[in-house]
Length: 88
Image (cartoon, rainbow, N blue to C red):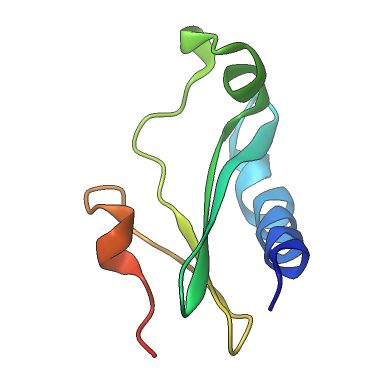
């Protein structure tokens, strides 16, 4: 799975599952590749583009996309991203 495919999966999940719960537009701020998965971190677009702290989500969980299956799962905000990487 390449970066564009992982981004599309994460963006679709954000649009369909997360965006309806938020007042401001969400966007991916980081899309990081690991051996077995991609991890997407999202936040409010205003914060990503302008660093407006009043529009910053705190405690949002990363989105983990398995490279082999394309399945997305939500991680947890209390653990470092590196500890949530999918196994082989």
